[in-house]
Length: 459
Image 1 (tube, one colour):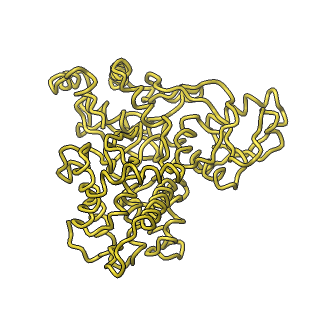
Image 2 (cartoon, helix red, strand yellow):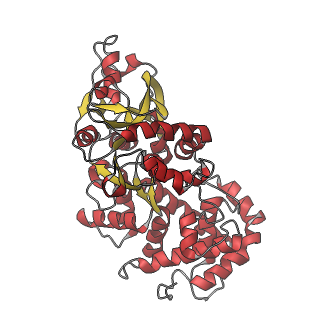
Image 3 (tube, helix red, strand yellow):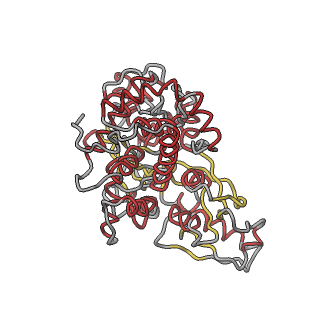
């Protein structure tokens, strides 16, 4: 978690934040209101709290000003500037600087460059040039940068055509390409980078159009001291290196831990014996199969106690700082604390699920909640119920989790966007690792199975 005031400005105190407030008109309720969309590149509720690169930057901007951040989510990108002009927010986040938008708002300093990319699904024939798109089925978001890029190309390729998706967003179109329901779409490179983490089959054929810059939009026709402060803030953010760190954290390549089974078996022989007593002890303490805890830890860290992800989680069980605080963990790189903390957290999730969910579905749902949060799991169960399936059956919920990445569906839920497809992958990988361990390390014959003692006491 970035703490801009403490880490980036060389010890700026609350006194300095108050001095900035003296240069600003009094903000209503001492709030800084960000307008944004719900999605992986902007803002969403993660497993342990709010997340997204725009959220992180806005939170640090609010800290910089000594204000409280309030996030106001709008349904569609086209509504951002409308709501900004209507005074419903102080700034709108995550917009490309385009000529048509300059008439409606003024933009702060750019913080990221993006390009439009032609995206297809692996296993299909990729287009090699714009001419290969002529006569093909293409859908893009109406009024988007992708549509502007296509309009520019039409001067050279007059037969180029496409469909304007007026009630869909880019994330939804990428989802359709991944499903094989749409041959191509065109999207900003930053949105593509995020979605390829969850849909590995997405491929980029080539880029089109000019490089564009992302920036925050501020109201155009009234004095706005926040606009000036934003320039100072981003200057410090860039100078400190924290801006580059944020971009790497959210858009850098994340290693998927589902590695070749040979590597896993080597680790089972060479590394697992070091931590097996810990998994066994934590399993006894929280009434969980030790092999399951070992499988989770392998998926999270490949049994590397000092592992760290691009998003800042660390240790064998990859715990966040907030989770450690809630569990009383003082050192998440300590294998004992990490394993016992992860086991305790998993047990709390199992206990929090409705009693009607049977085993083993209960544990698979708890694993999904470990990955994306129990609130998003409940959203998926609600979607399952709405579609006439069984919300207490993992096979049914598993099919609906990817819908949490589809704007058509997640706008209907209480907690909005979540990387549901990644959660399905997460659970399935752990099930593979667990199955292998049960085969290699069978329990005593006739012994009582711990999958699962659902009547275990609360932690």
